[in-house]
Image (cartoon, rainbow, N blue to C red; front, side, top):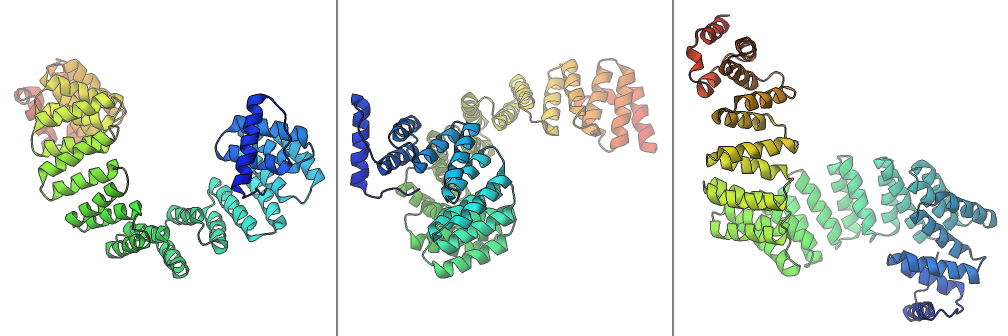
Amino acid sequence: MEYSQNENYNNMSLTKFESMLKTNDVLFFDSNEFENIIHHYLENGKISLAKKAIKLGLQQHPTSINLRLFKIEILVIENKFDEANTILEELHFLEPNNEEIFIQKANVLSKQDFHQEAINALLMALDLSNTPEDESDLYGLLGMEYLFLEQFENALLYFQKCLEIDLTDYSALHNVIYCFDFLDKNEEAIDFLNAYLDTNPYCEVAWHQLGRQYFSIKDYIRANSAFDFAIISDDTFVGAYLEKGKVLEKQQKYTEAIENYKITLALEDPTSFALLRIGYCYEKLGEDDLAVQFFNRTVEEDPLLDKGWIAITKFFNKKRNYQKALYYIKRAVNIDGDNVLYWKMFAKINLRLNFLEEAAEGFKRTLELGNYELDTWIYRADILIKLGEYDAAVYNLLQATEFYPESEEIEYRLGGLYFKLMQTDKGRYHLKNALRINNEHDFIIDELFPNLKNRPVVKEIILSSKKS
């Protein structure tokens, strides 16, 4: 469907239409005016106004194919596919060679996940198309349908066809690179982008994508050059400065990286990513005060960015300033109580400060949130043993065996705990199991249960294992 490009004409039609809605007067509009009004409302997401315009338009122009196609578009949005199909059948009977009917048919099929059928409809529309612009749009739609089917080679073919018609179709360019990335074809992507840049040398988007491809294969020198050309093509291109900063970090050129990240802060509102990277760079340079300043700015900019809180907590952790590290991780936990990374770090810092009950609670919460790493179970068990909560420690370790059935670290602890609880048979079973898996780690008994090793039954089991 084509729309009038005369802005004043469109504005007059819109003003007239909205005035009519306020006064309840019924005014006449030609079908082109209705099409422009409806298109404007759909473009701006004003569905209810679009529906009113379609309803009135069809009252005044009941035979208009384009207005009925707009009605189908609304029905698709509302998931009323049967009603949409009924109208499509009627329109196809009236105009069997109208490509827009096949495009809408494809839209209906796609929304119902019938992507191969949608492709067939789009291919029929392609046969009926008359202009390169129409063909380009159809190639893009075909590419998207193949993406839905995860047929990336076919999708790639059609997105490339879009670029053959219009070199400045950057949406198609992004999709081409997306396909190459998914197919793990970095070298092919690089060749494609270099060929594209031969014909469009000042395309900052292509230089940016080329830099990213070189970065992914760790060719940092070429990546750096590509991002430089992206910046030459558009010196306000924030993405190029960010990516260049990442390359410079890989080259350990932290001062230059900071300069590039800071340019992005001047060009746009600060992003938490840039602030965080600047903090990391200052930390690498040993400029601790500036590092902390930018880590703080990161979490102020985006309080939900876990990397920001983790960075500032790790910073103080490394400096062995555990009290400050605890302060920041507590703030993080208060903001996002379901973040497993926060809870694990909370638990470890409390353990460093010998706050055993808080540490045990932290590891318990970590497990509840789905972190089933072996060290989480072990940390919690060891804390419970120190607190004298042997039954709780046993229960914790038995749960761990469901995930790690052949772990000597779990078995030694279970053996020791059962001996402590005077359940000798179970103690013998788990200690023998531990020694069978790895008899070099019997020092675990010494460390956690120093009095047990002198018991004759424990001595006998260990010596017997060592001999065998």
